[in-house]
Image (cartoon, rainbow, N blue to C red; front, side, top):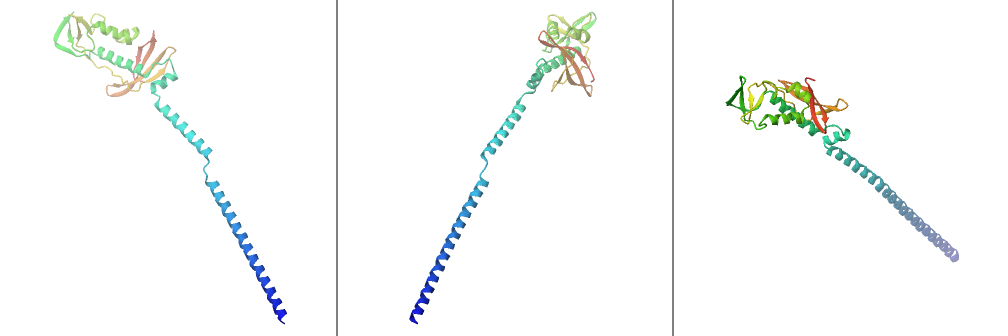
Length: 239
């Protein structure tokens, strides 16, 4: 009887020890699996969130190039852009200088210089008054100005009465410039952003706005290059 009880107890102890061993193995296996899964998840997350250095660098380089191109285009002066498009065309500055010269010629033909009404010289029955304006001091200076900016054709057509003929607008007297009182309205052309167009094989047009006694209109100022100098050769009004 005692042997039987002892054997039963021994079997019970062996069974108990075996269950304990299995439980620990399962726990260790479960712990290892959990650790492995966590490591893989962290690795996967890091891989997904890690920035693509190559893509970012390419995008930054592209944005820098585009910004540089936009800045360069914006910084190119209008006259330089126009010159690049047509090397033979007058620059904006040259066109503006011609417009200002034309305004002066219109002022002269309109007898628009300042004068001293008390200093009079009568020639062939026409009264001439001493010019006090500082722009010109004699007819030689007026003639030089004409020749510098105008062709002979437009001088003969539009400005021949300035210093030529039997009764010109200006004369020299006592080494001074005199002007007859024949004031009349004259045109003033705007030199702001003139539009330059090629209109013939050897010539261009400067399209400039002017005030036609209250109405804004556009004039076609035709120019040609004479021995390296741009000159006005004709004008058409009211385009």
